[in-house]
Each structure stands twice: as structure tokens, then as C-alpha cells.
Image (tube, rainbow, N blue to C red):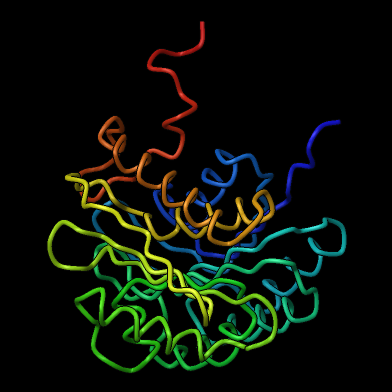
Length: 278
């Protein structure tokens, strides 16, 4: 008997360069054996060097996309990425609260790799109050965690432990809820992540890979988690596999030649041969 292929959903922004956002999420989910669906929550004009423009999507149309999809397709896991504005956050929180998918991975996207703001400053509180309580797993990097907690970004693994605890306390205490605090902004060559559920504090060690092609790493990790949660036995197992996949995608990123800035990671590194199929 064949396994059930999970249906996964990304609700995020569109990056035309394909390195981040919905296109990166769909690539990641597909590479990891899930069927990817997508709801467009924001439009951007961007490349590997800059975000030139952002165009919001009508909140009622986002609502229509979500409801129409869930009315027909059984969604096993949802990844939330760039939403851009508070009205979109309100709609996404309302509709996911209604449909109640088994897994929700929240990537609190606020700033692009090029430093451009991707979330209205006034919307941070809405994300904190409306989306965090719904999430199975939230995946902030250190600057994002600092914004959510209204404090400076920490710089040590020891400080990260307290941050992970505070973020976990902001989530609902019912059911399975985890924080994956990413250490990619730590100084030095170590990039330890912390996975915390209010009880366990699991270190996921890593080291910095020398490449400038890291556009969309956060999107890729959160999408990988959404793809893997329905296919694994536990959140820690999914997190370890997701990080392993991301490391491989970064290690092979220089095989791609996309743009002149921060290029994308290689989402299909373990699937593409060096030469085209004959």
C-alpha cells in the first residue's frame, strides 16, 4: 500500500526571483515529498539585490483563496510566511482558526535579506496576539525574536534559551506548541538553533557555510517543516530533517547562477543530476 502524500499549504508573498516566498516554499515542499498548494498574500517586485516594490493583496481575496481551497482539499500542514499588513494577518488568523489544520508553522517574516521591511510595523502586535497562539511551531531568527519580544536581539546561546522560553510562553498552552529559535545571526561560525516546547530545550548544532547565496533560507526551513511534520513522528524529528535539508541546499547553492546579489539556495540539490535527462 502506497503512503499518503500530504497536502501542504503556503500562505505567503510572491518573490519573482524564486529564491524566497511562495515559489521557494513550493519547491521545498515538492522536494520533500509533499503536494504543495499556495495562497498569495502579498506581491513583491524583487530580485537577489533588492525589494523594489510591494503590492498588497485584497484581504477579502485572501479569505476567498483560503476558504475555497480548504472547502475542497484536505490540508495536512500550513506554513505562514510574509503577510505584509495587519488586515491580512486578521484574515489568516480567522480562517485558520475556523479550518483548524493539524499543523501550522509560523515564520514571522519582517525583513528581507536585502534589509527591506516586509511587514507593517503596526502589524507586529497582531502577529504576536493572533497568529502565535495558533501556531504548532514558530521559527523566528534572532532579530525577529527581538521584535516579537520588544527587546534587543541576543548574541549567545545562553541568552537564546531565555528568549525561547519567553516566546513559548506567548503561545497557547493547550496542545503541542514549539519554538524553533534560529541561531544564524549568532557571531562566529556556530549557528546553533534551539527547539523548545516549554519542557525540552533541544540544541540543533550547525556551522556557517561560506556562500553569499542564502536568499530564502528562512522560507525554506519553515516550508520544510510544514512538509515534514505530517511525515514524521515528532516535531524534533521533523526539525532535524528540515535543518539537514537546508544545510544541503546551502552547501550546493553555488551550483546555481541566479542574479548578482544574494542568490537562492539549491532546493533540488538531491534530486537534480549534473546533466539533463537524455
